[in-house]
Structure formats: C-alpha cells, structure tokens
Amino acid sequence: MWTPPYNVMADDELRRTVLEVGSAELVTVGADGFPVASRLPMVWRDDRLLFHLAVANPQWRDLTDGSPALAVVTGPEAYVTPRWYAGKQLHGREVPTWNYSAIHFRGRVEVYRDPERLRAAVSELTDLQEAARPDPWAVGDAPDSFVDQMVKAIVGIDLVVEQISARAKRSQNRTLEDRRSVIDGLSAGTSRERQMAEAMTRDLEGR
Image (cartoon, rainbow, N blue to C red; front, side, top):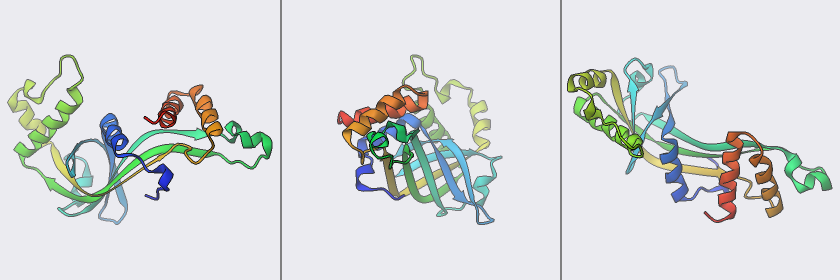
C-alpha cells in the first residue's frame, strides 16, 4: 500500500486499531485466478493472524500451505468536502478527498483441520472478545460434545505475516486551520464522521 511519510500509522495505533476492530477482510486467490474475500474475526499473535472459516465457505478449498494472502483491517473513514478549507473562499482551487485508516497484512497461509488446534484458536478468540464483559463466556461453558461438533464445521487459517503496511490519511498535509475546520465539519456529521473527527483531534493533541 502506497503511504506518504506523513500518513504512516504509528505502531501503537496500528496495534490498538487491530484490537478495537477485531476483524479483517481475508483476501486470497481462487482457482479461477480472481480474488476471493471473507470478513472474519481474528487474533493477532506474534507474526500470525489467526482466522477460521466455515467448512461450507468454498474459499478455503483453493488454499494450500504457502498460498499468498492479504488481510485488510480498516478504521474510521469519511468524506471531506472542499467547503471546509480556507482556500475555498480565497481562490477556489480545492478538491474533495477521503480520509481513512487501513492496515494491510501480507503473507502466506497455513490451513488446518486439527480439532485440538482449532479448539485452542477459537478459545483464544473468544477469550479476547469476552475479556471486557462483566461475566465473560468461555468455550468451556458449552458441553464438550457440542463444541466437538462445532469444531468439525470450521477450518483454521493462519496468516503468517511477512509485511505490514499501515496508512492513516487524516489531512496531515493540510494547514492547522484546515485541519481544525475539517474536525469541526466532521464533528457535526454522522457517527462515522465523528469517529474520524476524534481520530484527527488525537493527531493534533499528539495522542
């Protein structure tokens, strides 16, 4: 992913975003040579992203150990109108843009059906998602025979990460006046636009 220096996402934000979003678009190549994608919950452990697919999902059938893959995690995004820029009033030479944050993980997959490994993977994912709840549910709360049946219905996919690209495009190349004006405009908008305004505010505050 092409990323100008002023749009490079800091490592702490990268990891926080992955944890907060909790899922990624897993993109692989099908037997016909065209991309195939599924939105999946995941765990980032060391140099791996841990996914699982339903057996009924045909995407995994075209994969073997070593198949290339791309996982895409996206954060807040929003349209930015030229009307928010001071230059719109002065000379009119402004155009719209789209602010967003995105993280691309590139690597190769490992595909597995081992029941114990699958059970451990879904337990780790569940524990991660349940951790903040006052009464967290665990895989072990369900009957073993039921969990065994559920595990038979999924396929494990580990993405062994070889490269990470992370871009946070939030008007960093604009003047301070323009950035504040964009924040004001987005703050009065939709929930998604307000999320972008909050992210831009953190930028200005150095957080």
